[in-house]
Length: 253
Length: 65
Image (cartoon, rainbow over all chains, first blue to last red; front, side, top):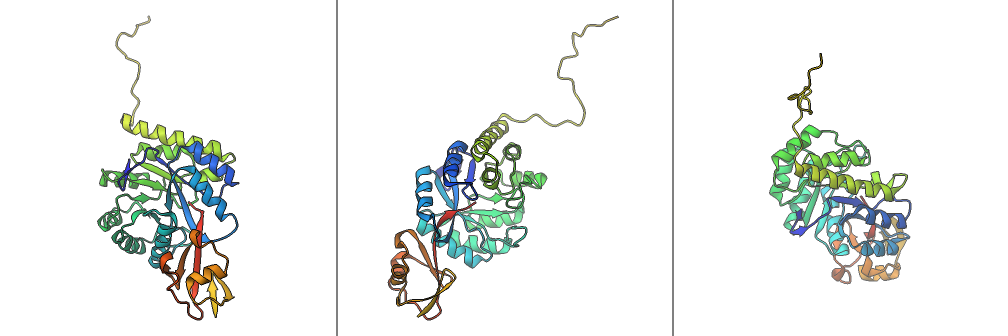
């Protein structure tokens, strides 16, 4: 998978928030096999220096986010700060439209994406499965789209699989990453079987009873789902069809 | 001069952003700054004057999803 000119082998992107400890976070990153981790910018508090060392030691590519921003202006300012601080043009662009659903504000998202793409950012927009919004984001310069599976942190999986299927068909050659709402490895595998290029998740690993083992499970599920997609799934049928040949069957009196 | 730094009202002697970071004990190399909602790049901090009541954000890398 090629994202803004960078080859990424692992199809699992992992968030770094809400883990029981920094040590478990570091182990989970390693166990997942991820190459891309998301981070945020917040007011400097205790543990900042240790976290900087941890993300540097992970060897992963950093995808800073604009999480929590509710206006295009806030997201643009946050993105500019992130580019200086992390030394990367990559930005996961989140512009939240509603505090309860955490669904993207499509209008502010597009406004911010236009500004940031023009400034040379590699924008990873957290969006919905809306095809027209997706087209406008691509026109603005986005080379990847990140439709939600379900509301952030909800663990509901793919709420609208048919809509996501349409999105995959509508953008056949564009990298599409399912971002948010994934709660179980089976849901991540389904996203990959539908042909999505990668999955970004956080809470499902961080809040598992054993985050390190869950990180490994997600890495395996994403890998299996991708292989299944490439292998070509059998067509679904409404009726049964025997798998054992009828020809040559014995006739018992 | 009274400012708001990361949401906290403070009285400072600094008159520019670079001096403010030093005065408040921030590690200037590992933070990013914004003044009144606009990003201020690190090289521009010393030349960025602070006005009475200015709102300054000093942000650092943190965990995120």
